[in-house]
Image 1: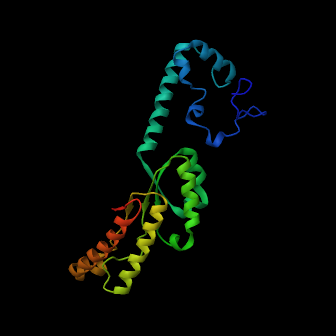
Image 2: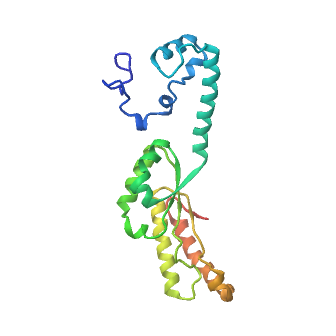
Image 3: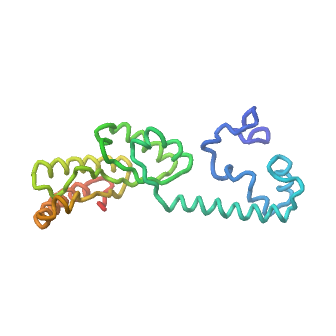
Length: 220
């Protein structure tokens, strides 16, 4: 506090860190102190043009308690859910919004993401997320990656791509990564038994890499 005001209170009368201000400040003017002290309500009413001047203290307490419960529920929900976002959209468009809202993430790595972005790009985003305490899980790439392909070269390429995705998962300290088998009944149905055996072999090799990762990665 400086001169009776928050140090981020600007000369223009506005918050200088509004996009990232803490939850305690975002609740203003619905401040919990109103619930216990009518003088707090009178002080806030004098400062905030949004309150009706003829509103009774009882009315305001009822409103504040309702709104605080809603806000607390939203904050608790944010901690329980992960929002899915492809890394390219996160990097190019939504990172600031995610940081502002404190949303936990499932980051998608499908398509050309692994070929487009560098380890430095992934690390830069992780550093920003970690500062906000945002947890990350990874959804691995899946297009054109059949674990049980009849072509050995295709299986090796699939494994290499998924190992690269696991290396990115370690940058984000993700303990899990979702993967897909790539099985398509239309194309692989007649060969499903052998396809499955080859897929299990590929998966065993991926699991070995996942166990050695830091932290170890559970493939889902």
